[in-house]
Amino acid sequence: MQSKLPHIGTSIFTVMSQLAVKHNAINLGQGFPDFPMSEALIDCVTEAMKAGGNQYAHTYGAPILRERLAEKINFLYQTTIQPETEITVTPGGTYAIFSAFSTIIQPGDEVIIFEPAYDSYIPNITFNGGIVVPIALEFPNYSIPWDKVKAAITKKTKAILVNTPHNPTGVVMTKEDMLQLQEIVLSNHLYLISDEVYEHLIYDDKKHESVLKYPELFARSFVCFSFGKTYHCTGWKLGYCVAPENLIKEYRKVHQFNAFSCDTPKQLGIAKHMLAKEAYLSLGNFYQAKRDYLRKLLANTPLKYIASSGSYFESYSYAGLSNESDQVFAQKLVKDFGVAVIPMSAFYHDGTDHKVIRLCFAKKEATLDAAAACLQKL
Ligand code: PMP
Ligand code: GLN
Image (tube, rainbow, N blue to C red; front, top):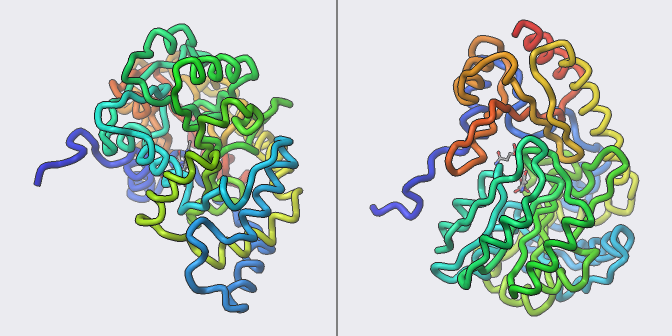
């Protein structure tokens, strides 16, 4: 069979998690919490199942969930989103993003992404017939080089993808970034896919600059979210896309004949649980404490953090310790030191290697303690 993705191998997250199991290592690689999710939310889902919420949900998402999402968006971003016509619930954030690409990309269209980039973007664009135009964030502060973005735009440029807070670097976009982005998107009639799955995981008193706060930009955008990050349940694979009616009309055609609809009891359970705003409003402080805890534990090791202000990742440079490639270094950490991490080069199409690894701090203190004890031996 002719491969549609001839250059794509196994995701680095799968590779490192398998190695973690094989070597019985502590997994700070793949991003997922190792502590329990809310019992209250589990109860809400159980109640929904017991009450008979077990058949197909509405294809665009359970109406009550879409209403709650519109209320939440209004509360957080002071904008009015129509639940009937501007929100579609999806089986996870990755699917929400993939569907946006499927909606807009025609063969040969160019899509600009920033690297290091979350690993699904390139295969998603390629699979949909698009051409990836990668632009490297400036190392080591991972800022967006807007001049290079402007220079990369051609007649074929169809869209830009942004991700804030950013995986893997934890960098967050500023208001100035958003205004630059808006200017570029509007003046070139582009579309924007905004990956905001870490919207609540933001630190150091920074504010999340959602595209939803920029009405003119939103008019050209698909804004994608994931409940997995917000409610510590990455295995639930539930998310949503917010986009203006004219865009989401086409998006829903793609969704309708792919997933058609999403897990009903989880939608109903989350809709009920969403009334407790504290669950998401407390996430910033909760995860900032974990980021700082890990920083402190690693302070006297040769690993030097490159500051993250969001997401549940922080990258660490080992340049002072070794010249090995980050792939080799990551292999050594998992095999000889018992800690799985992600080599940052995996997030670059050309394997750019700055001697940096990504650590996930969405872990119990005991897990971070145990990982740090292993890394002290470096
Ligand atoms: N985008 C980014 C940047 C992510 O880190 C993740 C989570 N792995 C996703 C999208 C996908 O979220 P989901 O697990 O809901 O598909
Ligand atoms: N988002 C998670 C990460 O960046 C993993 C998702 C996955 O395994 N596909 O680690």
